[in-house]
Length: 134
Image (tube, rainbow, N blue to C red; front, side):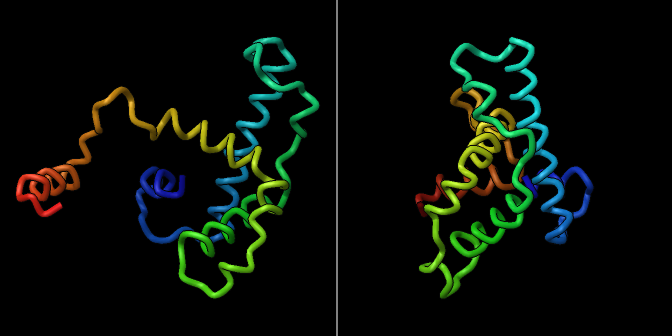
């Protein structure tokens, strides 16, 4: 998501944490609000959860907790990694992370079996594969 924001604003420098957090929170809230509206107006799929499963607001600390978890678990090498309570994060936020994932999959997931042309990245991958280096 942050890569998409960087591309959209035309600046690939690292986003400040508060700006990144506002984007993540805003996007997550739009998804949540959309789900709630679809349930309330009867356009949600039959398999959708009851409205009571979805609070009106995303928890205030979701984006900052998500960023800290991501940075310590998969983004950076840190001694704190082994002390992070993943179960607590899951219990508090899995619904929101899941909504973000499924929402983004429609934009970033593979469509069919064809891999998108990523220009120079794709060219490099093809050259490496042809040389048998992988």
